Length: 138
Image (cartoon, rainbow, N blue to C red; front, side, top):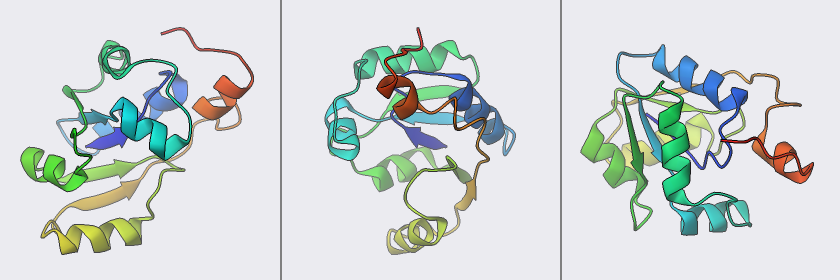
């Protein structure tokens, strides 16, 4: 399972999805709700949550793409879908230690956490792409 905003799906995201898919036989991608993405990123996503879900599905890598919880309860989403592994992006918060601690608090300590490698992060990083005014067409 992976979580993210995925405002513009680019080669960095595709690498992340491929790495995560290689950890198991079923990949669930959880796309952040618009209001959560705005609070977490401090700006509104360029694309709506529905468009972002559609664009992630177009990558053909996930087995399932879902929107995050309306109440932003990550642990309910995790409990519902029961992933064996959660893959974190190379720059994604929280740290593995912090996430393991939170998972223990929510009685989800059996889930493995793995940090994925970056793929050309000086080129394929959404904030860089958007800040340069170069939008990756979805």
